[in-house]
Image (cartoon, rainbow, N blue to C red; front, side):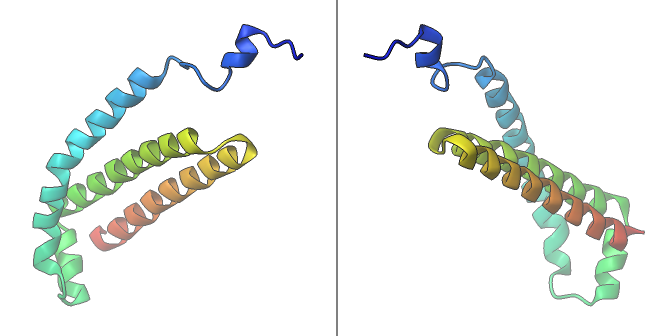
Length: 123
C-alpha cells in the first residue's frame, strides 16, 4: 500500500487560487472584443478588395490603425487565455508545458506580426 500525503493527492487537482483572476481577465477581454470586433469590421470591410495604395491610405489615418491594432492585441490575449485553460484541463505532464509554450509563442507571434503589418501600412 502506497502512502500519499494529502498534498500529494491534491496536487494538480485543486485550486491554485488564480481561477477568479483568470475569469475576470477573460470577461474583460471578451467585453472589449464585443466592442472592438464590430468596429474592426466597420473599419476593414470598406477596403476589402481595394488596391494596396488605397488600403495604405485608409490605415494611415489614426482611427482605423488604432482599432485594428487594439483588436489584434486583445483578440490574441483572449485566445491565449482560452487555449491555455483548455490545455490545462485536458493535457498532463511535459506535453502540457510544451503545448502551453507553443501556444504562447503562437499568440504573441501573431500579435507581433499583425502589429508590424499595421505599422508598415500606417507609417
